[in-house]
Length: 202
Image 1 (cartoon, helix red, strand yellow):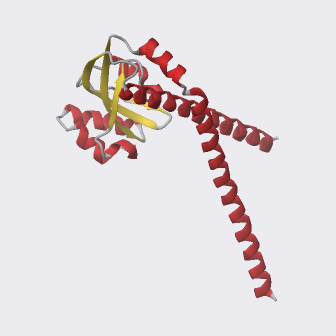
Image 2 (cartoon, one colour):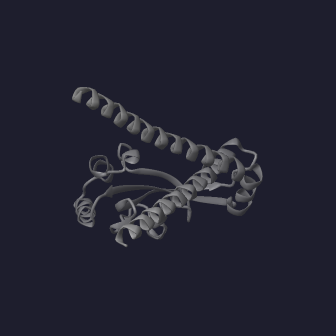
């Protein structure tokens, strides 16, 4: 009898665990679908044309950046100390950065039009860097960053009809929609956690 009850209990637990996993997976799929709908609604040809007219100047100055992301300010300062002694930024990024998307590329973030930087908390720091300069430790929601300006390019203005131009604008606008959507979800989760915690304290 005990074995039978144990088996029934295990099946119930497995069912509950499956339902939780299913609910999480369904929520992710719904979020992804809503995100794609938002992109289709907001990243239109008209929006791309407006961005081109407002931001595609006669000459476009782009800067490439690299960064190293670590857990603590002390780690970031230790990285900077090694760089001052002649260590190679790319090597340190590959061995120390916890940003798995860029670490194996030497911390390479890509090329960006001036004043349109990939990490909001780093905008002020990145805008002041000159090629070869290394920043002081900068804190973001992800941890502590050490950033360097890698290369600078000045490009003549391309026509809006250029496929590469449209692809770049579409990518940028889609990324903006995705970031805003992620920020919105994060704020909702934080608000829900705050609400639940306030209920527990009563």
